[in-house]
Image 1 (cartoon, rainbow, N blue to C red):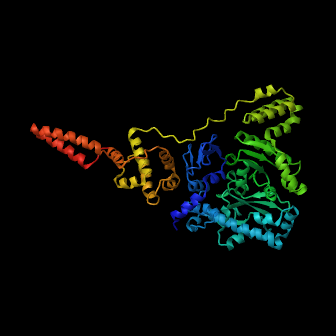
Image 2 (cartoon, one colour):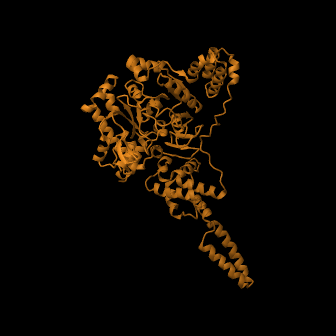
Image 3 (cartoon, rainbow, N blue to C red):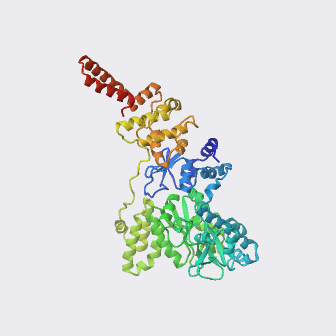
Length: 582
C-alpha cells in the first residue's frame, strides 16, 4: 500500500532531524549547523553535517545524507515505507506494515527468537520447571518487574525442548541451526538443544530485535555463560548489549558506562543509572569502538573487581583512549561485581559510587602499576613509557596537567622529565570544511547547472520549459537524472525543498542536488533569460548564426553560378535544420 504524500510530509515535519541523528551519534553545534563523526564510514575528524534549518544531513566525506527518512533507512537498513512507519509511531501515527518485506531468512530467524524468548520467559515466570531459577533470581534481588521488562527466561533442563518447540511452530531445524538455537551432530546429522538448564538473557541488536542470548548456568555447569554462536543476525563485532535501550540516555549524558556481565546490567537497570551497555565478550572490535565513538565523548569502564576484570580494563582503556575517547574507570571493591555491590550496599550507594568515583583511566592505570614500578627499575621504565604514550591522547590541557602532576608525585619523578617523554600527538587531522562548496566546472556543465538551478527554484518556470528539455540540452548525466526527479517532485509539491526532494533521487546524487541548492540564482530571472539559456544549450543560437553565414555564402555561389558549391551549402543547411549542434 502506497503511503500518501500528506502522511509522508506529516511524519517528516514532525521528526526533528537533530533529535533523530543525535540519538545515534554525538553532535556539536558549529554556527547554524551541527557536526559529528559520520556513522556511514570511518573517520577521525567530523565531516557529517546536520542542518536544523533545512532538516537534512550530509557527509562531505562519503557523500551520504538526505532527510530523516534517508538517514533512518541507512542506519536501520529499512525500506522507505518501514522508515515512515517507524518514525510515525512516536507521533501517534499507525501506518500499515508491508508484510512483503518481512519474509526473508533473517526476519524468520528474528521471529523465531522472539517466539522462543516469550516461551522461555513464560517458563521462568509461570511454571514449576522455572521455580528454582525464579527463586535464584529473586534471592539475588531481581524484581519481577525487571524480569518482565527484560523478558528474562529459562531454557528448561529437558531433552529436545527447544527442538520440539521449533518444530511445533512450523520452523525448520536447519533455520534453527543457522540461527544458533540448536546444535548439530555432524556424524549423525542430528539436531539437539544448544541451551539446557540455563537462565536466558535476550540480546537485541541496535534496531531492538532479539537476535541471540547470553545463557547463564544454574548448577555450576561450564561455561558459566554460554552465548549464541556467530550467525547471520548475531555478530559480536557489531553488537553491544543493551545499546538499543541505552542510546537515548547515552546521548543525554554524553557518556557510556561499559560493563562486563549482562546480569549486572539488568540489575543496574533497576537503579537510576541507564546509560549502560555491555561487552559481548572480553574484547572490543573495531566496529564496537567506532560505535562508541559516535555515541559519546566519554566512556566509563566499570568491570568486575577480580583480576580478570582489572586486566580487561587495563587493555580496553588504552584502546579506547587511542581512539579519541575520554576514558574513566569506576573501581568496584575487590572480589565484587556491580550486581553484588548493589545487593550488598543498595541502589543509592551504587548511584553515589557512579556519580562521585570516576578516575581518569591514566590515573587508574598509574595507581595500578605503582607498586610494581617502585620495586622494579625495568618495570618502572616500561610503565613510565606506557603512561607517557597514553598521555599523548589527552587533548584537555588542564586534565593532562593534572595527570602529569599526579604521576610525577606518585612515581617521584620530575614533572618536566615526564612532560618531555610525552610524544607529540599527530593523530588528529585538520578539520574539514562543513560548508558546501560549489565545484569549479567547465563552461558547458556550469551553464547546465545554473539553468537547472533556476528552474529548480521556480515551479512555474519549470512547467513552462519542462517539455523542451532532453538529454541534448542537459548533456551532463547527473543533471538530467535530477531533472527527471524534479518532474515527479513538482507533480506533488509547489515549492522546492531540498529535504523533501531528497526522496526523489538516488542517494549518490544528493550531494549534487545539495550543491545546486546552495547556488544563488537571480530571483527576478525571466522567461526570456531562461529561453536564452535553453537556446544556448540546445544550439539554436549558434545554428541561426551559422545559417545566416551559409545563406550569404549560398547567395555568392548563385551569383558565381558555382553549382557544386551551392549543393554543398544546401546540404549543410539541411543538416542544421534537422539537428542541433551541441
